[in-house]
Image 1 (cartoon, helix red, strand yellow):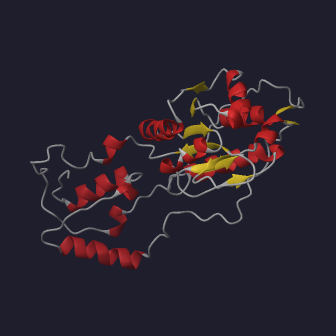
Image 2 (cartoon, helix red, strand yellow):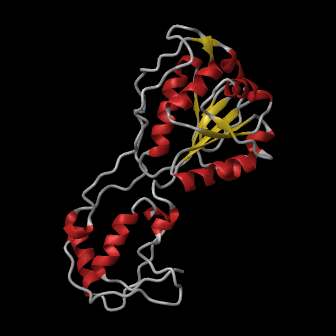
Image 3 (tube, helix red, strand yellow):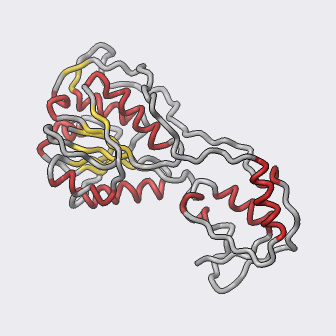
Length: 275
């Protein structure tokens, strides 16, 4: 089977696995711009001053972007094509230009479809583990989803180090919707990996895809925490303003909020260092 998500599960049908992983739209160096690049020198800051909650909160609610260019298919609208061709075209429609795919018995149909695709370049890794980490590095460097393809059995288990839990399973006619949902999940909320499990027999079946299917995510819950009440944030800001020797400790959850972090440092006039 084949999938777009996190940890592959053991099933009766051998899985081939595609991993889509995205990180921040901003390159990693921008995350540390508010902080001095000299680990032995403090930043130059003005005197700290009282803050207002409206000055700290971001006014922009950024949403995941999707490709908007008109897509020209290589197939006629009602022309049947293999499930593997539908999968590759679905990746094209999501703007994918590079995949990291190591061939195997359960993914040969997908690899054959990739050879017929002029817009997606396959970067051949030495093994599946190298492919998943290459896809992750690609996502970190480009801000785009990184796609990794591996075969069943040992190929799937080699991906475990780069995966988190998630799995989807469906039939060929649903591949366009499933891929659309996978990229939505990978890009929305707190970005992360998504697994799509596509059985080999479905890769070989002929089908006329429907690209206008709506997503079905009735149980979807964003991985971002709920927005806190302004009254509680006012208390936090007041304590920060009144503190004497504050320390700013920032984790990976702030990776998509580099501009907000920069503004917070400027408003609080914290002395910051790279650790």
